Image 1 (tube, rainbow, N blue to C red):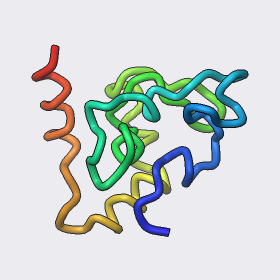
Image 2: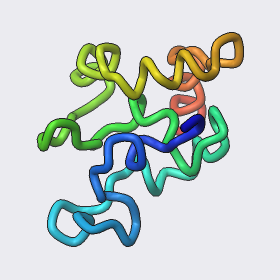
Image 3: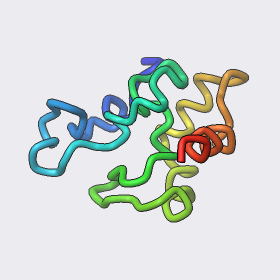
Image 4: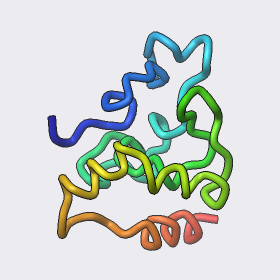
Amino acid sequence: MNNLNCWEFKKCGRELGGENAFVLGVCPASTDIRFDGIHNGISAGRACWVIAGTMCEGEVQGTFAKKYNNCAACDFYSAVKEEEKDNFIPTSFLLKRLDAEV
């Protein structure tokens, strides 16, 4: 079960071609290629906590600053940290990657 992307772990169906993508929209984590390969994920599928506009618990999450507390308590975030152990890329590094592209 290692290396699942968030949409696979959460079974939200918001990935490209997913069962809920047409109704709820495609999740930006499934299309943001800036993080492709991070934690061995597809697009931002294993770094979704830094992507604005993801949907959790049926509600669109805003910016990183607004959503991070929810993400830090998320079972998927915890699973990625546990799976990656010493290879886990700190959130601060991921955010710097976003800032470098602005």
